[in-house]
Length: 522
Ligand code: COA
Image 1 (cartoon, rainbow, N blue to C red):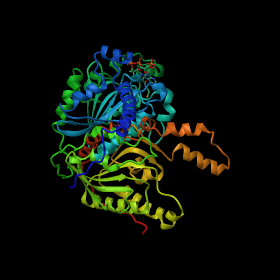
Image 2 (cartoon, rainbow, N blue to C red; image 1 turned 180 degrees about the vertical axis):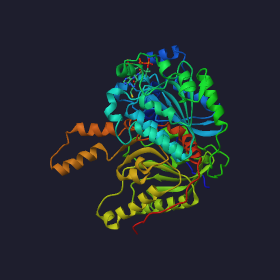
Image 3 (cartoon, rainbow, N blue to C red; image 1 turned 120 degrees about the vertical axis):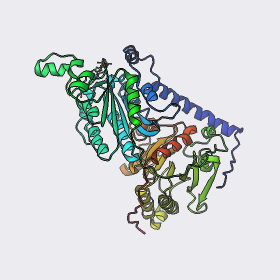
Image 4 (cartoon, helix red, strand yellow; image 1 turned 90 degrees about the vertical axis):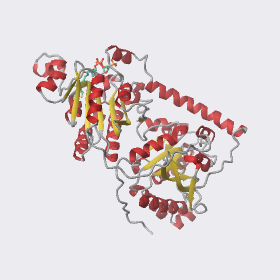
């Protein structure tokens, strides 16, 4: 593979100014991440620890193999909503190795409103299960939750992808043959009782874990019976009398040990055979991305400079370099895994769409995972392009993206606007993982354009309608997106190669199916 040459003067004032602007974005990002993950002073956390309980992230750290990474998803879910009372939406999800087996871990955070579920908690839980299903991962639930957050019940309880879908998924995952284990480390109430009850095996912690369909207050109200939580559904009851749980743990550490021991007997899944070449660091510093990332979308960027700071050895073998130049396609490696890269370099034209669709077909047939680097303002518009059949050619790309059977990892590195979002494997195209950079923005169009469109429809001048522009500005921010689980998390651009490499290794946990195509309109 050829090495990308860099033309950037990293000592020049232009580059330094851009780095300075990005430093502010990173400082905000770190503040947000800290407020969600470092909550030692939070009274609920203090009380939780005083009770001798480990926090959810520490439990996960002890569960996974020592010195191995954990790819935590959607850390900033629910951020900026509900008066910021639900850090990480009260649930930690991610992928790590347990006894060498790649596993999904879904852990309630009891220090966030008793681990109860708002709509983002449900969405995050379901997304974790979806990733487990797609990649044939065993799943461990660390349960410590009061069930539905009652004031929000109408948004959580009844709909198709509501709370009940968690248990539906458990049945589907089980039927598909993927192991699921629960460790009950606290409360497990009402519908929540079905998480351990529907797992293959359940471990419950003595004097701490409880499982019941109706807790003591409900029992008293319904039947008049007065009973303690422990007597109603504690560890002894469920391992000795009801049989709802299978393993009695002395404490949390013992429970984690039992779970790890069970993993020793879980069979290895049939993985996709895929060579991992030796890992080469990029020839250019990934931190230099701060000076290269698109912050002002009106100014063009050099996508090759960004690719050079993500891929192994900065090596990239380009496909169709001189055709449809507004999209860049080619082969590279990330953490030793071969990938096909599709990166925007301007508007999507007919040629760019055809080129990208062709490249996706090649990778699909060769079973090479795809990495989409999204920085797209949309498909090109105008009479010339419509007459050329941009809709027909764009449709080929959308077909290819939608039906690709190889892992698709999408990173939104800049703008993600209009149908360009779809053609570049946006969330609706089921990418295996989708991450955003802190500078990125997502929306049907920019605020100014929306205002112009409305001006022309309504035939009036809304130029002073700053409300609309502000609304678009707020709703297109990466933080707005990640809070609502439109992505799997905002990442530090300098970590892109690590995150993408890890994501690919997760996706190779199962065999890639044979490719299939729909009908492309020619
Ligand atoms: N809905 C709304 N809020 C809830 C809640 C629920 N289901 N369960 C707990 N909370 C809130 C509490 O009001 C409290 O809020 P605050 O911090 O604003 O005061 C916070 O979560 C912590 O609850 P608390 O009871 O103080 O914590 P705890 O650690 O001692 O107990 C539970 C946690 C979950 C065991 C306990 O709150 C409980 O039993 N909740 C009811 C569970 C239930 O019946 N759920 C049925 C719904 S399906």
